[in-house]
Image 1 (tube, rainbow, N blue to C red):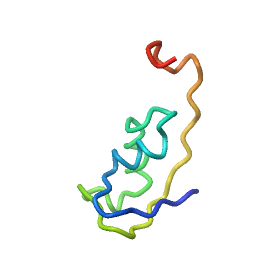
Image 2 (image 1 turned 90 degrees about the vertical axis):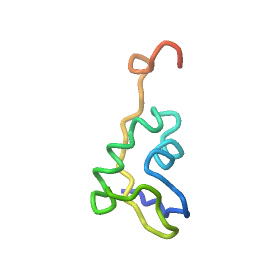
Image 3 (image 1 turned 120 degrees about the vertical axis):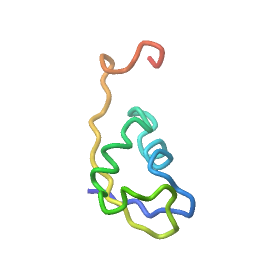
Image 4 (image 1 turned 90 degrees about the horizontal axis):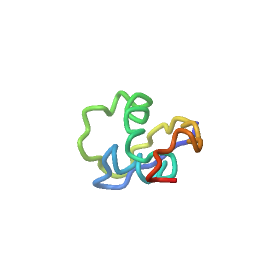
Length: 69
């Protein structure tokens, strides 16, 4: 499993967007929170917290909405 070290002000949706822009971005925020339940109450992160980054299945042409193809 990959790791991500937070920078001050990071939020789960911002991190998900950065990590998975081509895989649906912030919609994968739930998977990131589930992999890091001990931090689920954080609204904005301080610097230096190491988060587990789950593997996200690559989006196929069929799963990508028509307007993003």
